Image (cartoon, rainbow, N blue to C red; front, side, top):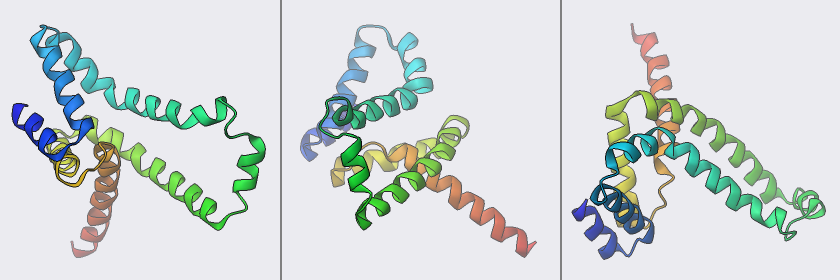
Length: 149
């Protein structure tokens, strides 16, 4: 974890730094055995909920109203964004199950996310979307492999 903290500091990645510090603090105060399993089981859902809340804030504050939502649909880019949002949400739903059921895939995805966050200033939503993409790729490999049998 200290190495990850150093990578976060060197890469100036606030998300990685905060995540490592929070996890180390939980361990140092002796709550790891109780808190880590909850974070591991529910963390993705809690994170998605927080992201959803953040996305809805402009609607609840009135910055975006029903009229703006309707007007935005007149743009080709808005339709592209709408399709992308639907596509990613569908992919990610498969990723949640994969992350919860396949430990070695989870380790690889988490490692990939850490590298992306630390080295490429990525955002740590990667495991969920990455798991969904991995799930789709696995299904495609299985599908095409069935022709070779």
